[in-house]
Amino acid sequence: MEGHLLAPMLEDDAPEFPFIALLVSGGHSMLVQVEGIGRYQVLGESVDDAAGEAFDKTAKLMALITLVATLG
Image 1 (cartoon, rainbow, N blue to C red):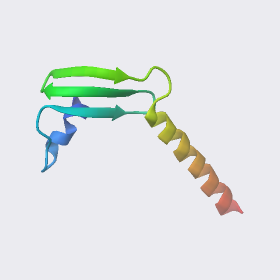
Image 2 (image 1 turned 120 degrees about the vertical axis):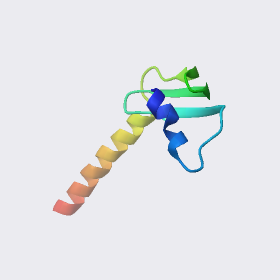
Image 3 (image 1 turned 180 degrees about the horizontal axis):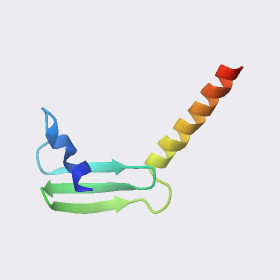
C-alpha cells in the first residue's frame, strides 16, 4: 500500500503533505489521509465491490463487444 500512496511523489509536480489518496484495485478501494511517509490514516474502504472492479468488468465487456464486432 505504501508504494502506491507515495508513487505521486516521483512526479515533477509532487503533492505536498498532507494529502488524501484514493487507492483503487480490482478487489477493493481505500481512501487514505497521508500525513507523511509512514503516517497514514484509512478514512474508508470498500467491503464488497470496489470502484476498480467496475473498471475491470467494463474492460472485459468492452473487449467482448470489440471481439463480437470484429468477428461480425
